[in-house]
Length: 258
Ligand code: CAA
Image 1: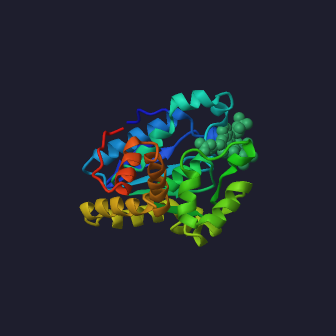
Image 2: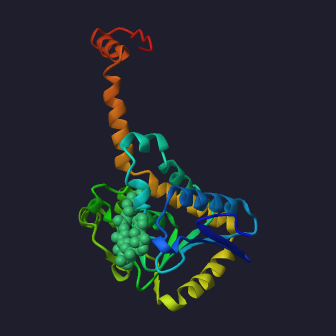
Image 3: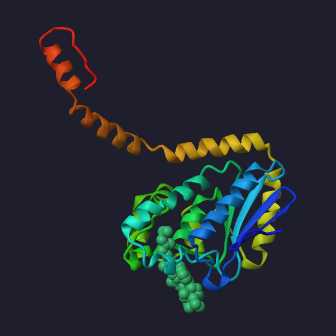
């Protein structure tokens, strides 16, 4: 049974499958669809029978990005209040492995969704890219961060500045995609692979995923920026002045928490 409007879900053995399903608009991701993806993922994450989650698109694409019709009329303060991208953060908290299965376009928000997956398999017709710049915006659901961590600064800048399409071959070459398969047998091959993954010890897989994501999430630079900001902020406190003054005056400081 399917209770969702914009996605299809199914379970077969240890594999759960989520399929983006607005094929008449190339599965453009509206907010409702993103909520549905999350709801389904969290449900599968809790289901003890599910070991691996597959995510793919119905029709001729994975998805062509966020729904531009929905975005066209919002302003900054609408977006800030909506706070829609906190939903996306929850995708990164799914504990079970997610395999993205991409054919055709995976652009903008859909590329961001693909980058949230743990493993990516793609058809040789897959095309990735961040065309946001050509709409006068930029990626907002983690694209600048996830792509850069994956491929490094040089290629990330190039692709993000121009919105250029990344072919399936390039995506494989730069480690965005784990495996390229011809379109006709893509799903069949992914299922075979996912079934072997489903036989691995689930707790190991869960903890490995968590540890790898930690390694990706916490960069030295990010930590240092945070440290630096807080370091500077402390120079606005009275306790800093008191502490240093006391040192120079060779006496014990009297800290007030101000
Ligand atoms: N939003 C809304 N509708 C979209 C869409 C989108 N992102 N992408 C495609 N569609 C619709 C088209 O309007 C068209 O609808 P109609 O048949 O009613 O006219 C239908 O899907 C089929 O698309 P095309 O006729 O354009 O198909 P094509 O094969 O000629 O071109 C394409 C395919 C190059 C992907 C083109 O559709 C396109 O450029 N789409 C927009 C891509 C884009 O800019 N995505 C980024 C969105 S911004 C974003 O994602 C922000 C973020 O980070 C959260």
